[in-house]
Image (cartoon, rainbow, N blue to C red; front, side, top):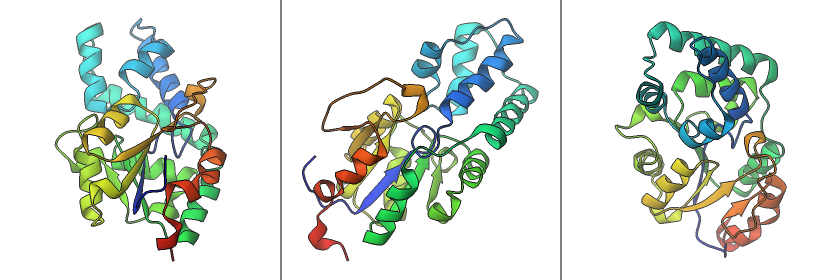
Length: 226
């Protein structure tokens, strides 16, 4: 990616800022095993990754004839939040990247398919909340979640940045599709544990935050920064 007038970096949360997707998969597997449903990693990545709870609920009903009740959803969140408390980690190197963007005066925010409660819990558990306070955008804010562009466009509009000047960083195909639909530049981040061994060489792929950090001078127009 050549130097561009990128004025806003939009981070996805799960699998990008925090290494949560394996924990999420395990929570779903534990819940669904009670109903004799074996959830494979491949199915999780294809149908759950980057999707809202509403989408997951619809998929479970269509594919397994399972209707998620409020009690079941509460149990899932209980399992997930307990796992967050014990095992959730931020992705390796993300703090250095956020600190560098702050130092350079490059604005950034988070736009996630997760609920406000889950997002706040995750960012708090990993010590990242202070970087994003006042700049957290969740699925609850728009009518259509990813892969629709609505959430990214909402975030850009809220921060008064033109879509063409935004850079989205996503780990999931729905997120990448949403970025393209919003006419935003994007990076596919593959450094999360759920994409382990998924090493891709592409101008639009970053396999680690060290790689992103080293490419900052190529991504941003340094003449316009501070």
